[in-house]
Length: 260
Image 1 (cartoon, rainbow, N blue to C red):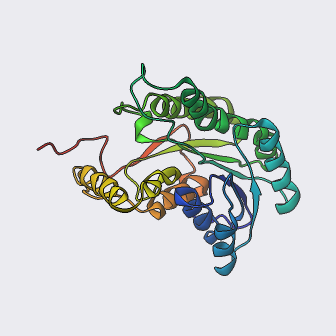
Image 2: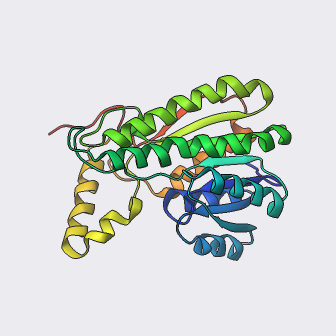
Image 3: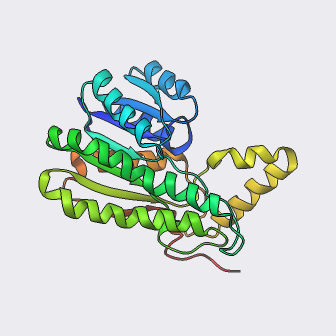
């Protein structure tokens, strides 16, 4: 689990799962480029206070110009690029397919699927040059199973799952390992949607999520750090014989749910 001397980019790392991954990689010895459309100074400060090294670059992963600037800026400021964590993602709107706004569909695919492709596209020359590049994609259990009223999110994360496999086919022989994590119920508020409800509505939304998580075999939500530790494992030599793997960190929810 040693990342000493490595340079990692973690997209969507101003908070939540991405922030936890950035902190965990720094703790394992990596120099970390924090990136997000939201300010990432908090994550950088936490890393530096713990004795790590980090910097921040703003990036909308759906914009190729910004992605190239992120990669180039990382190499210039941190001295290279060894690890890419494609974590940035959005919920993508709710509603059945006939109700979903086309703009929500397009935006979800642009961020959740095209974004990881763009980051990978621009990072690959540097990952190849490192001789031991690592790509960790943060997909979702909703990329493996269907979910109510989430066609854009399910489709985009399902695409990311199979992009992971395809990249492993093309690049594993060149020293780059590519794996994906599919988190289940994680105790974060993706996109701040729950917080935006405010007051009682926010509390009720969290209680509904906890009740759903309680039906998993493990019976609770995970903390973001529990996903981060798996990301560090996949980026390290501890997972040296893994590529194209789709790793669920889901409390068993894709295995079964307890039904009333």
